[in-house]
Length: 454
Image (tube, rainbow, N blue to C red; front, top):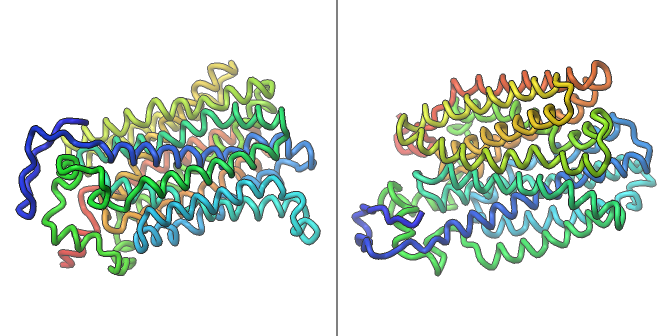
């Protein structure tokens, strides 16, 4: 990462080969990984504490499924506005406000049974609405974070950086079950939501102090690092036009792109499969596989451990494949391989009688699912760097609909037919997600279409 890449730009002087890149872009990636991890800790909080809440308020599986799914509904509806706000007003400010928003409603989950809504609609609705509003805040985090990836990383390292950023989600998934369960057992389930909310405020302040919208604005970015980031992005005038926040988002052009529709449809399928791991998985391990609460909290971290291992490697593999085969084939082939592995392991894990072996297979399925998702986000920047916040928001809107449906349909299928069948359906849906990549061309960008409308 420290090697200086020769940078050719008629509007800038050649960078001396003796100057080492500052590495600020990797600090930004690290901060975004922390933010991504925080979103998953907050999101998984209810999946872990849900066992205590379900027992305390006597919610049946269907009611608990709707409460768990309410987050994803709010998350889905506001992705596009959140991504557009990042394009229009700058990702630094918008992401700060988003973190503060979802942190407030994370903490508010602790008092959901005592909110005025309970007297009008009941406890379940109060939980559901609180989680819906938390989802509204989190909806901006990943689209805006992905826009920052496109701005702060060059083409040669974008998939690796994006997969590292998204690996933060997996780290959050690893620590959440153990920490949340420990807090809930010692101080009550309410404490886990309050502490997560306070942590979010600290992270929001740190992000706002350190981050900038673009690397050119950061005082610690030197010329060598800027050369790596901006390589291949055209002249200074072209970059200025690309960063012009007053440009209207070309929604007709975006929604006319087969690649955008392919990403949106495929993302529904991938998130449906992964949704099981941050909603029902802990309860599945305890109620279906018969694990104790302590063992369940430990084993429920395994899907995210797999994500931490597989995702960065898959991002590196995708960048290497792009270098050898080009963007279209490089991105597509790495997604196909990971989707196939995820679907087969999901199916196999559901049918395996041995608990440890079954859980390891399901964990690996989740890891390959996350690896695929990292390439999805990278492709958003490939096809629409200037409007990547909006495109990422559109893709994630569809994905979150899959996340909303996942806990609800999984509960219904598991109740009526059994958990093996519920996992079989998730495997088939995941496999179907790979088919959409026949229509995705990461080498053709919306930005190019705008410059060459013919």
